Amino acid sequence: MSGDTLPTATRISDPGLRALYRQENRWQAWLDVEAALARAQAELGIIPATAAEAIAAKARLELMERARIDEGFVRTGHTLVPLVWELGRIVGEPHGGWVHWGATTQNITQTGDLLVLRQAHATFFKQIGSVLFAMADLAERTADMPMAGRTHGQHAVPATFGYKVAVWIDELMRHADRLREAGPRLFVAMLGGGAGTFASLGQQGPPVQQVIGRLLGFGSMRVPSRALGDHLAENICILGLLAATCGKIGREVYTLMKTEFGEVEEPVPPGTVGSSTMPQKRNPKLCQDIIAAAAEVRSQVPLALEAMTTEHEADRTTSLMMDAAEARACIAMGDILARLDEVMRGLRVDPKRMRANLDLGSGLIMAEAVMLDLGAAIGRQRAHDVVYDAAQAAFVEGRSFSELLADDKRVTAHMDPKAIGKLLDPTAYTGLCADMARDAAWRARAAAQELQR
Image (cartoon, rainbow, N blue to C red):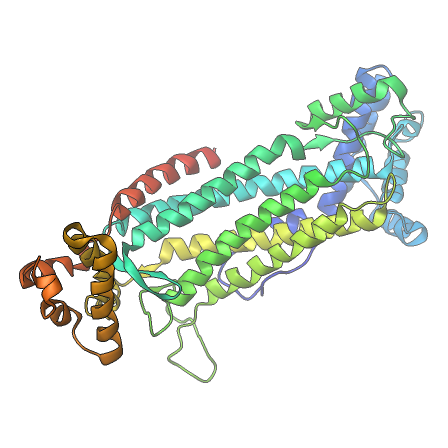
């Protein structure tokens, strides 16, 4: 459950997700669950309190002989048994025999891996908070900055760049809500034994599981079946949604950074080399990283859903699939958010280029405004037909849209050239873009403060 998603040769520091998913960190999380199991059983009088104290005191990976553990894994091929053996050995007599009492492997590994995942979520919340702070500043700074709004790749109506950022903020905040709301469903202790039936502990099983949950800061599974995976898959689906939004933002910046657009540029520090052969290149490296890693996260969603199809009461096949999907998704998600934060903090915007692009159609982007104003006099559909004729002639014949309107008696019967000129001003037709950008900035800062507490 580890791996590199993006190249290590990058100026962006690793946010720590790889370390979380190192095998040693997982082992320690499993040992933490073994300690909680012993404490819970002692609290309920199932094992001696002195045994629980001894187990908890020794449940530290640094106290164990790694060579013994490694040899045990080679010999047994088992996920957990060598670790349990070593814990029992260093606890020693008379208490070592109480280690792992009444539990099965997946009870320990799944609950322990959720401890790791909770650490990952804490990192994600801080990262999303940092991104939202950066986006809030960007939205405010560009709230009134006019640019071409585009639909289907074509000029639609004017907008502002701040409005575009408001859209990003709105989505990111919902993903943070989804992660938070999934917590009670996701972070639950499991102690059902071999087939999830509580046979090994009987009536004491549910109380023990509840105490384990309390000790770990988790809830407790009502039905601790090893075949249940929807809560684990939900987490990966949410990460897929988050990655899709980040990928969309990366793709938007990538597109607007193209030479033909030139409206924004991701941070390109002095000394950055874009090409070994073309010295002029200023490539969107961070955005490319985001787009690529976002695709990797989304690719884990089908794997997680497939892993829900567990056969009978347990199936190691689907556990392996879910574990792999979680690790890959979390590591890639950390990389994505680190780079998105860098892009949002250092994004260079070019209002002059935005305005130049806005004027490429020589007023065509204002066709809707003209149609609505004229429609008040002659009806919307008839006005649409009149403006359509002028707009299509301007585009196909390369003629001036404003002159075509001024030469059309159907138009001039209701407005003079000065009124037409005023209607063709794109900066006067950005609707509530600036208001939405400032409102999003305010909401982003409030949400970011909550996420980073």
